[in-house]
Length: 194
Length: 94
Image 1: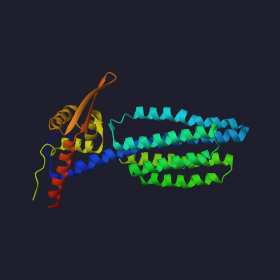
Image 2: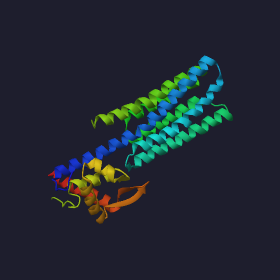
Image 3: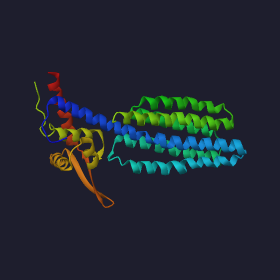
Image 4: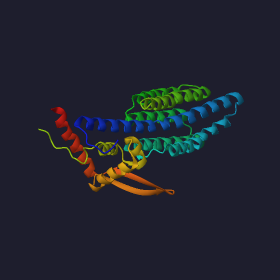
């Protein structure tokens, strides 16, 4: 682009193109928490399910704390490598959604482990599904809204499933709810720029 | 009746910059340069013009040893952009 006068039609095209390109970048960035937390949680849940299933030792449940221990550094690392070059209200809203839901999930997990018994996998999945759905609403991405709703509905099944199968079911639902929309989001926006 | 278009905005690069800044809270020089596919010298001149008209604020800071130039749109700039779009509609409708 250069400094030159334009006609009215070109003006409209410039405005539309610039706004749309910027929006696509913002949306693609919003998909990163889905991938980071989706993969971390699914992989650790599968690991716990496998280890308890093969050894019978319930101490493997302490590995749940590996999710924040691994997820936070990964989140920080991906933010640093992305070097976006801009900030938006959408960014801030999405970050705040995950801060609130993430903190609540950690608090619930600590309470469930050390203070009082509660259906923790049900609560975690319900809270994270709400985070996915809210993010979808903020960035106006129907796939995330749909998968978030799916997660909310699926979480209620945890109230009826036996303990070890709960963990496998949790890993699968989490993968579907976060990793799948995260990849769809990333590829959709990437394809438009190829 | 055609309404007059703000000459400061009615230019390819300045309009592109304003269109980006209207969609974000702030953007740095490198991002604006990439998005508009412009040269650093030209972009710098156009940012100065927008800043002189109080349409944008340009801030320079340091990230480590490198300087970082960040821009954000002002209330005046936002109003000017909205007025520009409104006036543009009169041309499209005829």
